[in-house]
Image (cartoon, rainbow, N blue to C red; front, side):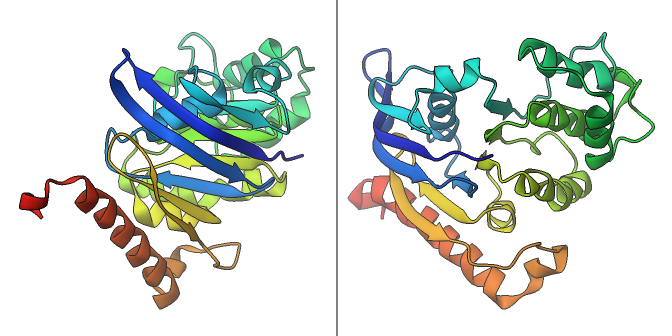
Length: 259
């Protein structure tokens, strides 16, 4: 199952005068994977947190399948994975995954949990605690936990940022097939332009803070996407378009004398 997401005039100001996100209209189609990219501190994560219902908008609204995020959260139809896996250290991989089902008051089907563990490449580590896992393995466990409730909407905030480059590439290669198979609507915040293009159907480029949309770029590349796609000219063309949009957004915020 997947759901559409609509942001209407969505904006956030902190402390009354620190504008983080300017009024933004965005719609995400059901089953679509969208990457949000922009300079550090531009408001990407704030936007994602408002979609998740974790941050109250200063103005505007978010609806997920026509409902507010809090309603979707209560039904466990929304899951989030952050850069920090935040696994409970006293629980094994399996028990951390089961926690999501406990909180959602869903049945814990051993077969489905084992399938998730297999899908994220943690066979043989189901009973291992987080301290005994590498950073990449902990992140895989966190993503398995996020997927355990079979959410209609998956939000990923720099989910691969804390792992080494080789593990990051492996995660980026392995995991899209998991959420694509279930038709999950996915929003991804990332600083990596190549990662954004490799993973998404669409890249939304944001300006420096306060965030506004600079470009909305379709990624019309075939799936499944293999690592060698990154060496093809059509991939490089989209990457260059995203970088050009980022540069445009930054240039527009500079004083004219500095341009």
